[in-house]
Image (cartoon, rainbow, N blue to C red; front, side):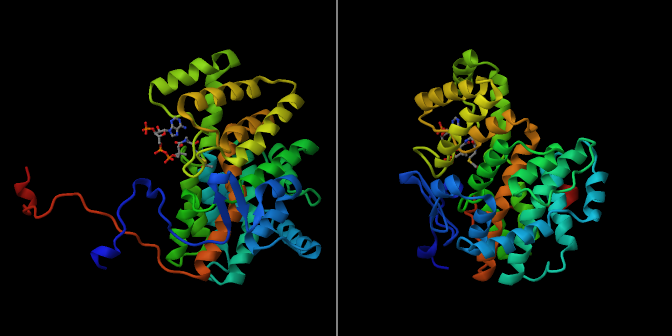
Length: 379
Ligand code: ACO
């Protein structure tokens, strides 16, 4: 490699193109998000998560018969192998759910007959299975950590409603099923974000899909990425009441702290996913008969925009919605993972289909030419 081939270092890799992909397009300047050519606004308004999962994985919207086949395949894999339940039941009850999710996916990978087959066809099969299994892993994994029995998946409910059915162990409210469907769609895919990039790096070594997904879950967990939905809810709980929202934000900013659920590397004038979900914060609050979290969000948004010119990202409204639906906070980032499995898988497939090892370089800034001293001369 010659000097002229070397691209200068950009902190955080900001603005660096690290690959070419046809899975999604973030048109930040227009505040648009496109999955495989379809605008997220249309998908959010009209689609079922299963259709979007098919679109993200296969590259186009399914016909009716393709959708039926895909749904049947998902249904077949909703239940987890009994060996995996044994593993989950053996985890200490204090385990965190993201860790349990990594254990779960790694276990499924260890048991996967097609584990070492990275062909397009095998990867699609594994992705479909994982899409079904991750929802069960999150819902029943959480139940197990709470000392409850897992709920057998439903054979009749769609993916999002079945998730709520398993999580709560009862028939889900129809409206909440629709809201969950929407958040699954909005969380499904988002370009070369940190967790997807992690998945692609792992896949680029020719490691299998389950290994790449296990790594992606780890990358998602951090508060600067998927962990922000849990952190945002903790922040709102710390605010407590609408009358404290402005002073709380100002206090945090005064201490140079970040307000979780705000800001985005790509979107600087707003995240369309947050705009879509904002209406649902209101709708869910009205349904719950308590506008508190809507009002707190409203004030926080105005103050953060005024003080920092930062807009909320998808995690901010999602957190309030999940909270008002009665979902425990440690389940929020795992839900993100259960939706993002489609995007991760599509990127892993794209990587495997046209692979070159992802191996950037670093500029060394440590010492050179130090004299080696044998250990007994080092004090
Ligand atoms: N609250 C307060 N200040 C912020 C925030 C925030 N949420 N986000 C960025 N800033 C400030 C930083 O402190 C920094 O200020 P400085 O220049 O005075 O030091 C400046 O804005 C730039 O911050 P960077 O981290 O360099 O910006 P970047 O574009 O790389 O960050 C990120 C994007 C990590 C998402 C950031 O906005 C953030 O930390 N947000 C909070 C965490 C969050 O919500 N993450 C979820 C992202 S969406 C997703 O993963 C689904």
